[in-house]
Image (tube, rainbow, N blue to C red; front, side):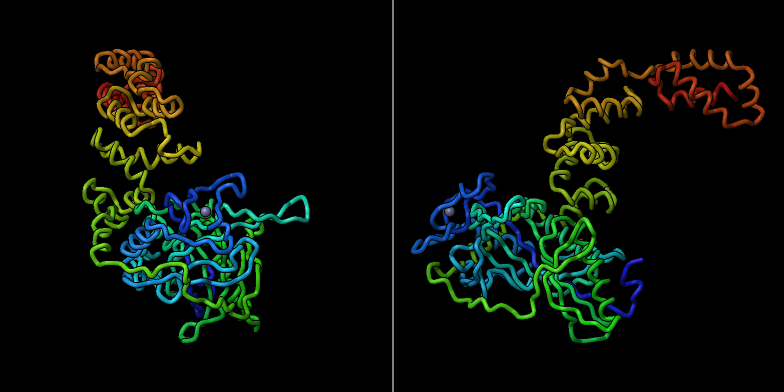
Length: 482
Ligand SMILES: [Zn+2]
C-alpha cells in the first residue's frame, strides 16, 4: 500500500529540475575536450580553470542542442537571450561565479507528455530550459583530513530543465524522468548515463491536505542516480513529511540526500533563507540573437522522437503497447529490433528480444552494441527454428553459444549436431518402437490415464537426444495411441 493510499486526505506536489550534460565535442566556453578524464586537472585551460582576465567564447553546438531540446519538449524558443553570472563561493568554482542564464532562458513554456499509473497520459509543463556551465568537483579524502579540487568537469555544458510543480506521485516523477531521458538520448545530445551524473534530477517535494491552496514547505532531494532510488526516496520523503505534520511538527526547508544503505533521506543542508546570487548579465559574452530560419533549420533536422517511434512500432510491426514501450525506452534496442526484423520478418523476433536478448544482457552486463548475437544472427536462429531445422530447445542452445563466442548460428548447429531428427518416417519408426516396448503404459493410457502422454513424449525426446520436433512427435503419438 502506497503512502498516499494510507493518508488519502493528503496530496503531494513535486517539481523537478534536471541537469542534462551535453555531449558536445568541446566545453561550453573553451576548446578543452568535453570528456571525463581520469587524471585530475589534466583537461583544463585558463578559461575553464577561471583565471582572471580570460575571455569565454560560446560553443555554438550548445545553442543548437538547447534549441533541439526545446523543440522536442514543445517549448517556445527565445530569439533574444543572454548569459548571466550567478555568484557564490565554492572551492570547485574558482571564478566565484557560474555562467548561466537568468531572466531570459533560451527555451520556455513547454511540456512533456507522460504515462500515468491508470493508463492515461498527463502533460508535465516545463517552465524553462537554460544553458550553463558545470563546476569542478571537490574530492574529500577517505584516508586523511584533506580535500582536493578537480577542475576537469568545469566548463562542461549543461542544460537545466525545470518543470512546474505538476507531478503528483513517485510514479509520475519516475515516468517524467524516463521520458525526458529518452528524449535527450533520441536527440543525441546527452548520453543519459545517470551513474556518471550525465543526467541528474533534483526533486522538490511538498505535501498538503487536499483542497488547500497554499503549497507546503518543500524539501529538495539531490544527486540521486537511479530511477529506482528516485522513486524510493520520494515515497520515503512523502511519508516523512506527512508524519511530521500529523504529529504536529513542521517540515523544514532543506536539501536532503538519499542514503541507499539505510533507505532513508538525510539532511544535507538547511535552506531556510534563499541565497542571493546577485545575478547580472555577463559582459564578456555576446547577446544571443536567433533568426527564425535558424530555429526552423534545427526543427527540420530533428530525429524521430520517442513518442512517434512508439506509435510507428505499434503500427508497422503490430507490437503491443507493452512491447513497444520497452523498445522505445532504449533507442539502441529499437534499432536492434528493426535490424533483426529486416533480416527475417517474424513475429517471434520481439519475444526473443524481450526474453532472451534483454535477459542475457542483464545477466552478463554486456551492452546491446557489443552483444555477439547481432541482429542478423538472432534472425538466423529464429529462421532455423521456424523452418523446422532445429527445435526450440536447440535454438536456446545455439543462442547461448553464439552469445558467448559470436559464431555463426548455422555453424553451431552443425558442430553440435543440433539438426532436428526431422523426417516423419524416422520419427515414426521411433514411436512404433516405444509403443511396442511399453505395452502396459499403452494399455493404461488407452484406459484413461492421460497423463502418460508426457511419458511417451519424454521417451521419444530421449531417443532423438532432444532433437526431435516436439510437434511432429506429439502428432505421431496421438495417431498411434488412438
Ligand atoms: Zn578549458
